[in-house]
Length: 132
Image (cartoon, rainbow, N blue to C red; front, side):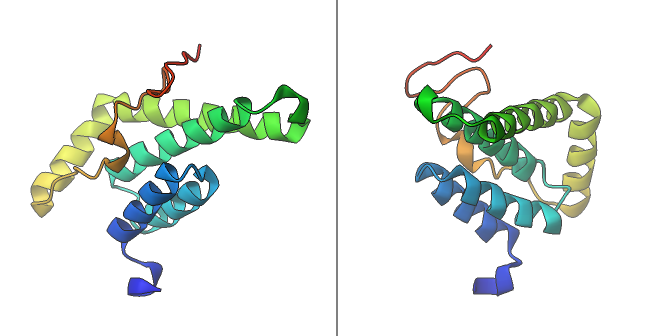
């Protein structure tokens, strides 16, 4: 509705709101729209990886009696996608490209909204579950 859905910063804030409301699917959708418009923004990629991670882990936290094969497949795919993105982000080449681009445009890549708490792929800060 605002900015015709084209403002990546607004989409990032929307994704953060969905993330805090524990609605990972909607957060993923907002981040995918933002990444379509700004694929060079590493902050968006980081947030998307975190969102994918929580999307997968939220399903696996459900009662095991409600699991379906498709649901487990989707959760595993989300976790794999998150791992791939985190790995890509950790590569020095990706950081170097982002740094050069931000220096050239005079902008900073500091939009890691999900990093308000120490969110890592190793565990959930609320209950310290470790994912191996």
